[in-house]
Length: 274
Image (tube, rainbow, N blue to C red; front, side):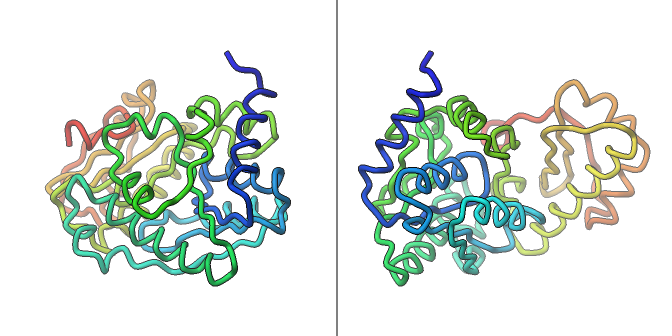
């Protein structure tokens, strides 16, 4: 196992090799937060730009948390509006949806970065992401010459969390927070209404769980078209399924009239079983 010092050295060397200044496509998740922190350490905060794409697919609360960390790092943080829903491939929601999403996001971020004099753009793609067969968004980055220092340094997700903890980043144990469109079953059209009701439903179910003393680390509300599935950490499935008020919370969020079930969370579940 590589030491914390070795992980740090490998990543900082990769970031320095990119030159500067560096713009980071910064979602606020553990991966992009580590790249942002590495940029600030290796190049200096004034040579780093954080850019967070803001659209209907960004879950409520994520932007404020991202902004807080960027401020702590002393990095300028920009939040351009992106328009994924204007892309037919994104709305159609096929297995390649992420390609169209990342194309929109990276085109917007790259253009804004160039206007500010930042010609190098990096993402938080890590070594595990590159090995995942369900990552069409990575192709969009490669086509655009986007840099991937975590991947180049061969850092896995576990390495990201370990080094983030070593650097005392608050995102070291942050659960994965993919875009809201990842909750919608392939083939079901992505719309602003569907994204908003998923966001409302997840917030409502999480609040309901907290009232009952349950605090799932991972929680998803999947829009399956003809029904809804609430996914939580496997040990909590039975407790959540027995929790009064879930049906009402889902209905109030916009899923009225649709049956629901409670099941175990698994990252990328819609890729393999729907």
